[in-house]
Length: 112
Image 1 (cartoon, rainbow, N blue to C red):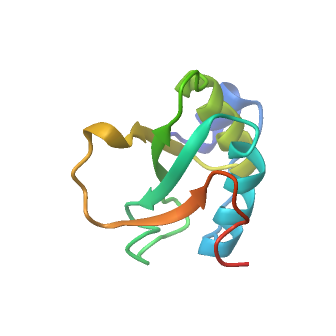
Image 2: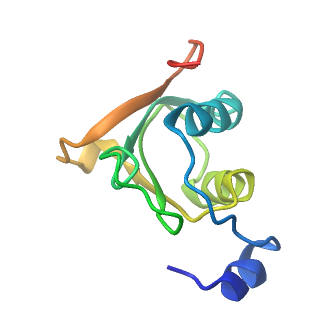
């Protein structure tokens, strides 16, 4: 977890101290992922377990399509949009069961 000043130095913005609703995360993620070749995104961690706090990381598990963007560029865009730390991982290597589908390619956002 980065301090507020470290976050500002790394991303050029200050992080927000708030807990997003799932619908807010879905909306922001949908706006960004629709530009990329990502097939599905799952929310996991504190947000998926409904235990998020102001300093919780937004953790996403991605199922990428062919020619998907490099994760660092996507992570940077999501972090700047959410103004929170974002963790991305490739779902093909994940066995975590506590996750929630929040984005499906070629579809509207799931809950708003």
